[in-house]
Image (cartoon, rainbow, N blue to C red; front, side, top):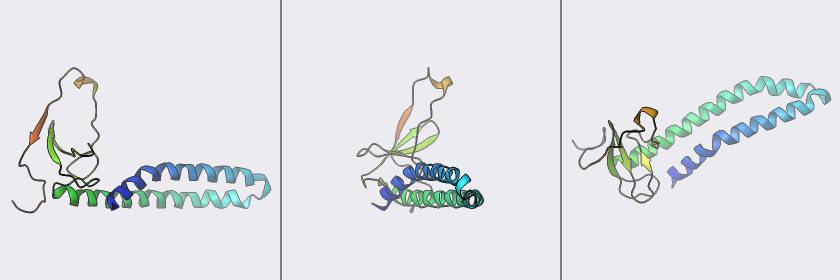
Amino acid sequence: MLYRFLRGFNEIYPIAVLFAFIAAFFVAFAFTVIYPLVPIILIISSVFVVVIARVTFLVMRGFERRLALASLRSDRCPACSAGCDAVRVGERRVLECPGCRRCYAEDGAPYVPQERTEDAEKPASFERVESDPLPGAGGA
């Protein structure tokens, strides 16, 4: 549940910050003639707000990946708690949830397949991995 909340927050957060900065621009533009101190304060503070927004995003994404990695180490999907299947995609090991069809990389990040133009003619190679534990998992 917490993972799904963080994932949703991390998907909406950059767009919300962008619209907040656009709104601040229009406020500064409107006050340019009326009261020039407002745009000056907004311009000076915007540098610090950008840094705070970026650090907040990185911290929240780090929490999301930690929660995902903790769940993936026990072969459970972070979003729906179903069992995950390990799939080899090229040289990478990807965990795929049969319930919600989400894919995760070994580090807990959502896996997004990348298409390259030189690979367009080649067939895809997927292999099921039966007993290849995650690095750092308990046991062997």
